[in-house]
Length: 308
Image (cartoon, one colour):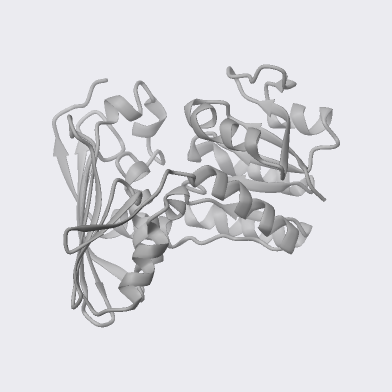
């Protein structure tokens, strides 16, 4: 069944930085078409809309959707309804309800839906999960601070309702935390900082508890300049675990235990191929559910206006 004929919708920065290099090295996928209002890929047939692409390329078997989450449902529904397997960039949608409907549609059409969480595939995440499973956890601290002007310059959609704001990177942290902790944790309180001219937050502080009263504290901030911080720190009976650089490195009691080159998107496409071959879907909504809970429980704090 391989290679699978793949189309990409939304040719932007993440596609050029991550998707295209990974697909080019994959033996499981063959990029045969793109659909985007502006971006194109040299040597690949380009269309303006997903409808045009689906009509023009009947051999298309799967679609990767990489447009902003506010616009993803309609494209996903069209692709699934046409019998195509669908890869959803993170976050999988703007709401929990629409992703649940897409999962039901995929099942009805006997095609696969894959909600991707690239940070879960960072090289040190699985070793961190194994370490935490081997000991008793006392507390967890999540620090995810970066410079939005560097990572998302002039991307107005991200400040609009549904664009998630600081939860766009913050959900990466949540995707790791929900994967490595041995039990589910739940938000108990949150504070979200909204620039006075934006509909999405620029910073957030979250407090979680699990059924055993484990405390998890997370701070997300998009105003950090200089060195960027993507760390998860766990105090345990076996000592201090630090999962750093977004999951690239693992240290225990100050000693580096694991560090390998990043292969996140190559791993995502391998997983997508596995899901398709198995004839099922992989849609974990735990990270997005935490974001929704933060908006439900969070206190809103208005801060200074943001300008790129």
